[in-house]
Amino acid sequence: MTAKDIIKKTIDIYNKYAKRYHFYNQHKLLQFELNEFISMLPKNANVLDAGCGTGRDAKYLSDEGCNVTGIDISEGMLKVARANTKEVTFKKMDILDLKFPEEEFDGIISIVTLLDIPKKNLNKVLENFHKVLKKKGVIFMTLREGDGEEIIKDKKYDNKQRFFSFYQKEEIENALKKHKFKIIKSDFDVGSRKKYIQIFCQKI
Image (cartoon, rainbow, N blue to C red; front, side):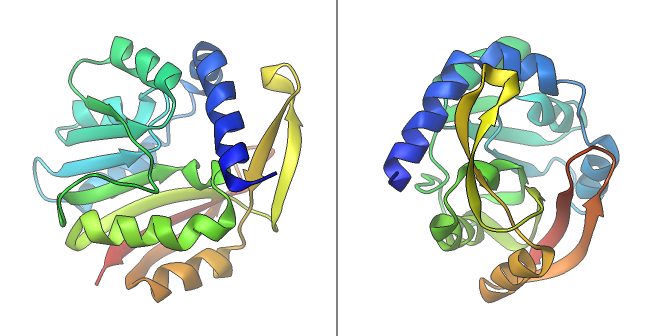
């Protein structure tokens, strides 16, 4: 399966199951971590939610005083997001082709977004993040811990086959350093059955 096929299949699933996705994920807010992210930003910061899904995190950041732009490649996800909050600007956009001016944002969040992206595209994603982030801007990202890539049947979505990218903590840290980000904090969230990497980093 090509990267293009993977992305198309992912979009199709998210378009079809956007409301179900919102139901499963609306209570999984990383409130402590998002507050820590906000504490690293200037007042009224411009924030990009890269892979915003149905807008859960974008809404929280907006309610806490950030000027938030949420982007997603799924129109179904964006439809739900727009219905749930009017204070956030939502745009259909691919993180592999960010159409923003350079140094537009004080911060970026990427909550499990790289799960859906083939690993060969990681460098492009980080290049784009670096380009649109202001100097000393901050990223908070989460990733599924593991090795390689896998096609998995997802029980939540009628056993549809989904593509997953997994990362080791040292692997993503090295990639961020290569693209001129300084690691501020890197840890694991072990509060669920699945293990997630949580990273705060800063553009240098």
